[in-house]
Amino acid sequence: MNANNKEKVFEKLRSYHLEQFPDKIQGENLNNFRIALGTLEDNIITMILSLIDGRTKFTDFTPELNSFQEKFTRTTTGDSHDDAIKNLFISKINQLSDILATTKKFNFTLKPVRAIKVTAVKS
Image 1: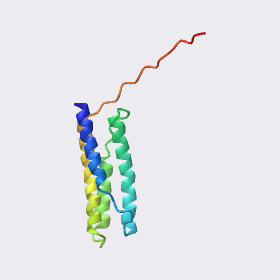
Image 2 (image 1 turned 180 degrees about the vertical axis):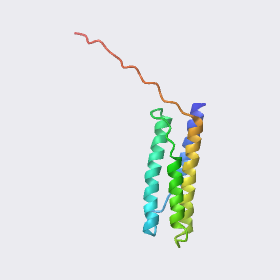
Image 3 (image 1 turned 90 degrees about the vertical axis):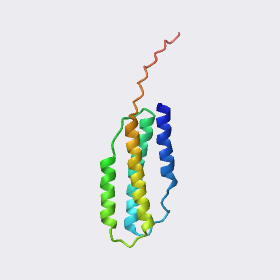
């Protein structure tokens, strides 16, 4: 069951990475948001991969994602920038929220700490 849960999370991560931002986004404001989302995305994905590997506990980034989405929506409302880019931002944020919710639901556990092996030195 745990392997199936891991695979479901990996499938969501794969589909998340299929949508990519263009290399260059017009408008400094949107480009700054792209960089900020990239940083938040890196933190979330690093936590998820460590969680699946059993090396860390779940950290809920939902408040940070919601705060980012509110700031993005508030700042870009009324801008004449490309609506496709705005929709891509919202889509990426929603996908990250979904991945977090799925990961939290599966309740992955930490790996047990291995005992230190002590070997006798032969003289």
